[in-house]
Image (tube, rainbow, N blue to C red; front, side, top):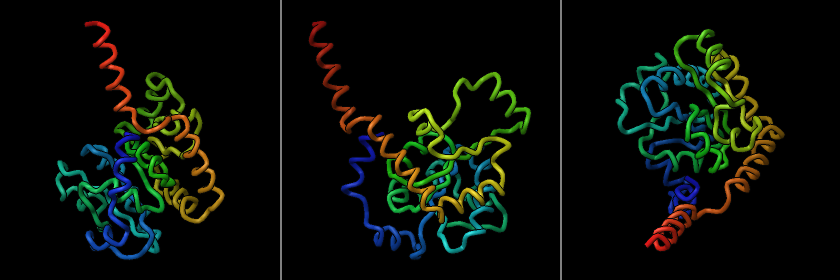
Length: 217
């Protein structure tokens, strides 16, 4: 993933190109990554949209997934429409001021693009599912990859019952307007990059494989 992000940046479209390509305006962009599966989108996108409506000074843009029915993004969150860009997640993150992200690999990608974010996730079952997950299944303190790698809550997680409109609205205010809050996230992102090492992991892995195969033969 680190290699993919680093190889994309030199060829990434400029912000002006990205805006023109997708008919977006000049307001600061907030990336909305609602997940890659239908159930994730159904769970996270409604509260994301509702919170987005509270900040018209920002431009919330959904990262659409090509194999997801485009109509789903409009149907979820009735009465609230957000622009959707398909197959342009890296371009979106490259020009985003902040992000709302469903837990998964996208949280690490967002961190590698150094975009302040908060993480959302919810499965069916309400408080009972939360109790079972927390006490019987989850063996770690956090669910997002940046927090797991850093072994601290560098980015705020709103999981299950904590994923409420009020919490997300308040979190967005911090991400948008609290400079110390943003600086803290950027600082943790720097530490994250150090812990992940240098780009080139694919080439190093291939080299090691060749060495091992050569020894065996």
